[in-house]
Length: 283
Image (cartoon, rainbow, N blue to C red; front, side):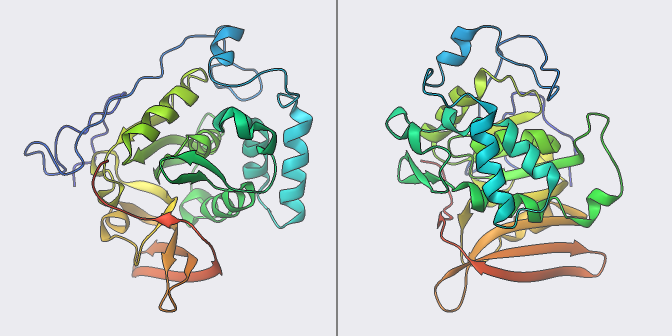
C-alpha cells in the first residue's frame, strides 16, 4: 500500500492504483485565511471579525462559552465519559454550522437539516461515537506534540463540517470525505475562517476510503450501509478502530465498532441509531 500522504489541499485526480482518474476522483479545497493562534486550542483563528461574520450569524447570544458548556454538561449527564471529547465539543461553536433559520436550535440535542437531504447529527450521537473512537487501543501507545491523539483519522461524510471541526481538536491529522459537491463546498466555507491546518477536506467516494492518506488510526462514518466496506478496514492500522452505523438483519441500523487486531477484526454491535444511507459515487 502506498502510504505517502498528499499535500494540502488534497487532490483525488488519481485513482487509488495511480492509473488515472478513479470513480470518485476529484477534489479541491482551500482553507487559507491567516490569523493569530488561539492560546486555548493552539488552532489558528480568523484574522478579523468580518471573517467570522461571513460564516455565521452574530449577536444571537450563541458565541458564549456558557452556551456550549451547558450542552456538554448535558452530554456528560447522558454518559459522555471522555474529558478529551467533552473539551473538543466545548471548543467548537455548533451554531456556525447550521442555517440561520435553525440557529436557535443549534445547541439542542437534535439533528438538523443541512441541505441535499442530509443532516447534522445531534450532539449526543457525535459525542457517543467520538467517545468510542478515542478509546482505540492504538491511542495508548503514543502522543502527539500538539497534545492531540497521534495518528490520522478518516471521516466519511463531511456534511456541514461540524464533526470535522471537533475531530481537529482530537487528532493530529483529519481527512474528511464528502461525495456531495454542494456539501463539500458548504463545509469548506464553514471551516475556512477557522484555518484548521490539520483538516483535509476531500470530495470523493467515501466507500473507497482514501488510500493515499492511509493507514488510519481511526475511521468514523456519518452514513450507514449494509456492511462495513473492506476498503475501510484495509486502511486501518493494527490497533485502530472504526465506528459506523450498519443495517442489521432486522432492517434497523445499529452502531458498530470494529477493532483491528493482529489476529483479525472484532465487531461489536451497540445501540440502535438512525443515519442517512451510505452511497457510492459523486453527486
